[in-house]
Image 1: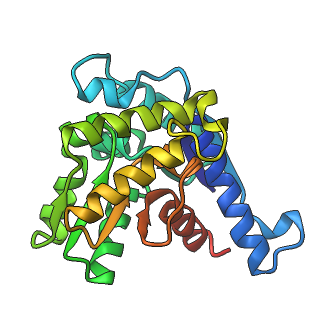
Image 2: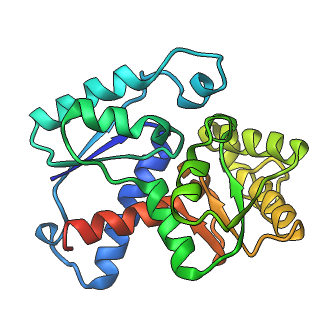
Length: 232
């Protein structure tokens, strides 16, 4: 029984469930029973993960531990977090909840290693970058890979884009410059121009309004990992 700690953000968690359903239907599922049982907890009242790591807010860790324990009591046997930035504390949360977790950041690193990518851009929250959430796993598994970051101007664009996924700006007209997918396209192009061979989408919110065939998409990888674990 998969338990998903979501709400970070809400649309990203809904997109994760949509991806799982679509992938299974495309594989031939045609009844409800063909889909895995899951518990989804939209943890919307937990403090911001990014703001905590930026030193501007309260810790989210205790809330995630409490939520994980609730899901364990409800029957979950393995958990995941639909938030890259929250993986800053995955070891602590996993230990105190007492259930194994899917580590989506580590799964992203494994995909980069499998594809033999040597220069990779990283689009992530300010908190994720400040907390060096991805860097820990790069050093552990693929220390020879170069991470390419947005410059300060483009990183501000990333923050704007993530915020705009969560508000009505994601419903702006197709080519509006403030629509998230257009913001993230500009950041992606910037990273490719800086020499990246591919780009990590290191924030699950981004996938809500941005897709690209050449990216390493953490939300897509999380959906695939859930399907693999549940044998569906």
